[in-house]
Every structure is written in C-alpha cells, then in structure tokens.
Amino acid sequence: MNEKIVSLINNIEKVIVGKRDVIIRVITAMLSGGHVLIEDVPGVGKTQLVSALAKSVGGKYNRIQLTPDIMPSDIVGFSMIDRDTHELIYKEGAAMCNFLLADEINRASPKSQSALLEVMEEHQISIDGRTMKLPEPFMTLATQNPVETYGTYHLPEAQMDRFIMKISIGYPSAEQELEIVSHSEKGMTSAAISAVMDVSDITELIRQAGEIYVADTVRQYAVAIVNATRNSPLIRLGVSPRGSIALVKSAKSFAFVNGRDYVTPDDIRTLASDCLAHRIILSPKGRSEYATSEQAMAAVLMTVPAPTK
Image: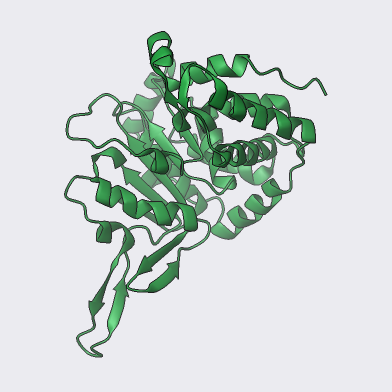
C-alpha cells in the first residue's frame, strides 16, 4: 500500500475508530474523482469522517447545513454590484472549495438540490453567463438520515446517479464505542488532527490510480453486472452506463489503495453494491422480496458468473 495512503488512513483513524473499510471506500471515491453519499442514523460519525478527511489532506473545506430555506445562491454563490466600480462581482458560495460537506442533503428543497448537479458533474459554476471552474480536486460528500423523513425531500434519480458511491458507517462494537468515548474525553476530534498531505499529493495519487490496469475480462464482468440490473425482474429501473464507468473507475482506485497495479474480479464484486445499488429502482417483485436496494443488488450479483482468468 502507498505510504501516503497509509498515513492518510491512520490519520483519519485517530478520529474514526474501527471503520477502516469505510475510510478506504471514501478514499477510493476521492481517488476516482467521484462524490459520496453517506446514509446513516445520527451520531455515528458521518460529519467527523468528512471533516477528518478534509483536514488530513489540507484542502479548502466548506460545510453547508442544508435546510428547506437554503437557497441555490448559498451553494453556488451569486453576483452583486460593487459599490465602488458599479460592476458585477462574484461572491463565492459554499461549493467553491476542495471538499464540500452537504449535511442532510435531503432536507434541502429540490431547487437547492438541483444547484449541486452542475457542481458535481462538471466541477464548475455558471452564473449570469459566466462559468467558473472549481478548485481541483473537488469532492462533494453528502449525508442523509434514512430514518427521520419528516420534512425531507427525496433525492431525484438524476442526482443520485451523480454519486459514485453510497455508503453506510454503521454502529461500532462495544469495544470500539468504549474507545470512541475515551477519545471524546481527551478531545480527539477532527479539529485536533493535522494535514499529512496536500492537494497536489491527491492530484498525483488520482493520476496514478487512473493508470491501474483492467483486463478485458474484468471490464466485461463489470458491464455484465450492470446489464443484469436492466434485465432482472427485481428491478424496474436498471443502471445506466454512468454506473459502469463508476464501477470500473472505483475498482481501479480500490486496487491502487490496496497496493496492486491491476484490478481483480473481487474488486468489482466488493464495490458493486456501493457503486450501483443507489442507482436502481426496485420493481414491485423486488420490493416484496427485499427490504433494501442493497439486498436486491446482492441477489442480482449472484446471478452473474465471475471470470476465471
């Protein structure tokens, strides 16, 4: 495993205890140039994880707490008249950064949610006929609470498709929770950690991850999984080609994070649910047999044979 990645994981683990797999997946998404939706109950460390990642890298980090009264201009910025020159000047919104934490994204109105579409897909902001590029690397990490849905807005499929992964942190074990409580008493929060690399290091790691080798059989395996979602009776809306691209790109970064220069079928299988489950809509049959899209995706995955070589 790359030394810089090891130091990054270890630094985040000073705050996020016992969730190494989750940390690796977030780093994988970052090295893939993608965005992550973290869906979990309150209090398990979603915000701390994002903050720890941003502080470990040293990039510009903005957080916006999304509520129904948040306006698109709060996210992308706005133009105003300069009192001295009487010319239009741009005032930055929360999205003008390297790491954007969109906290409780499903509480924002559809109008505000749509403001993130161009930001996430094109890494740019268009206002009053002008287009401004965002700093690179740029990553949106959004959180949402799947339990409390009162006063929330469902994320449209077009926006869900912009997230390269949807992950869950989950509850810690009793031993891990004891360590978390101990860290809290000692003030070990994301504010207490320092950067172990800068954005130029991340840019270089992204370049290296993009050069990881993918055999034709492995690429065909990823496409076969995506095609299976379009033909399964469990699924009403299958995964688009953007999902195939996301899965292969994520697998390359996952292999790189794990110290390999090639992708294996296991990499594809490991990430299939994270990269694809949030892109599907279950059919009535799927909803009757499975409680979640992830469970249905696991069933579909079992129907696709992995390549033997």
